[in-house]
Image (cartoon, rainbow, N blue to C red):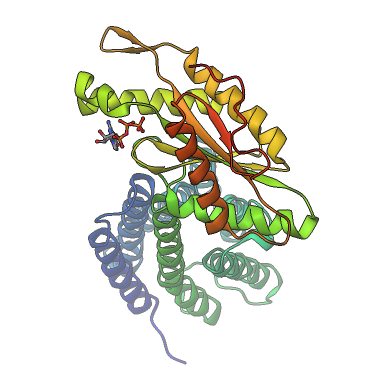
Length: 399
Ligand SMILES: Nc1nc2c(ncn2[C@@H]2O[C@H](COP(=O)(O)OP(=O)(O)OP(=O)(O)O)[C@@H](O)[C@H]2O)c(=O)[nH]1
């Protein structure tokens, strides 16, 4: 099949440049690190495009210029792509490793290209540097194990493996073919195929990168939709999901679980006195106090203005009442400093335990809410239980 290295290179140069522009244009919105990674990937494509342009313009360049400049651009683009991918995956960037790979790779290529020319060793040296970059990508992609990999991650793993195989194939051809090409610009089937296939890589890798970017945005969105923006704890949606999961686990295992509904007392007067900003600070301090009393598996969420819920797995009503009392006591004895004024906050808490095989989340939360209402009605700063046998039992009321 008749082909020209220059034509193939020119197509790759244009393709990489167009991809770079498209990716750059797509960097609006999205969380900071993901957006930066996309910009870096776009910049890497622009550098890669410049490398292909040099190969396409070989007729106008001195061979040493092509060799040193082309390889510098290629290694730089590879390194930038590695950092961009690792950034998107939230892995350590390994800037120094990537830089070292690029410098050592380029020095070797320069040595075996200009000082002591040996084409096969030069190609092997450059390929080893690119292999090291591929290994850094693979390591980031496979972090957490194959089973936890998303589809986009797996697609990129396959593409990286393909790129590695292409390098192995090219080096194999150079070392074991009886009549290997003596340079990349020489018209030869190995060169044609290598330039053709490696010219397609930016397209495939960019598609994989965009799929991963999309997955990252979706994950961020999923998390954002489940976090209370003021306090950082779970919001109502996330709390309901956690409660549903926890309850079904408890029912499967025949274990108990409890819910505490916690409401700050007279919060309106705090807002009236310190303004909404001061009230917000009090809510943050309240979350800290509640958190400080919880165990590892307990979950806290905010379901309303000054209303919080704690989900306690493996906890029966008696234990839930002890936990609730601990929270009430901690809040009461932790003075808060708001705008230079010391403030004593109290909370009322309603506790309910799941009845194995009977309860569903809505009913459980309703019972805890009714107990909270009873605690408010009884004078605030106290804990009340929802269980009929225990309703009215007041534990160590601090009021
Ligand atoms: N600072 C702040 N205030 C909020 C927020 N959400 C709701 N609030 C306020 O919380 C107050 C709740 O008032 P109420 O429902 O009357 O309850 P309370 O004053 O705590 O009285 P009791 O619950 O009966 O003890 C209102 O003033 C709301 O404006 C918020 O995100 N930040």
